Amino acid sequence: MSNALAIAGVTAVLRDMIDTTMIDQNVSAAMGQGVTVTAVAPDTIALEGTDARPQVNVFLHQVTPNAAWRNVGLPSRGRNGDRLSNPPLALDLHYLVTAYGIDDLGPRCCSASRCCRCTRCLCSRATPSERR
Image (cartoon, rainbow, N blue to C red; front, side):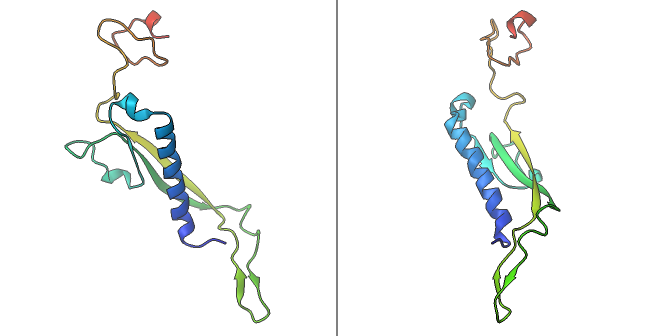
């Protein structure tokens, strides 16, 4: 059965899954500070000032009907005409997941003198042979 809270429930579960992954992968240690996971409109996120912080945002930007699930599980009715169950909510939810950091590229993976040979080196000072 589904109702109006089903979409909010999906958003909350998706947000929690991203947050759990951030904790499991120890992203806070790599970033040097905590990364928060939010579910707000992208235009309300503070990009500058004292409120700016590293974060991942989940935003539901489009909901479309799912034609394959639309006619599955029609509502069942009892003898007196009361509804016994609701059909599944036949919707496709399209999310926009964005990451925000305080700096342009986040924490630097390289020092000024030599590259640490990380998987994806973003340091412009490293030579092509050092950027493996």
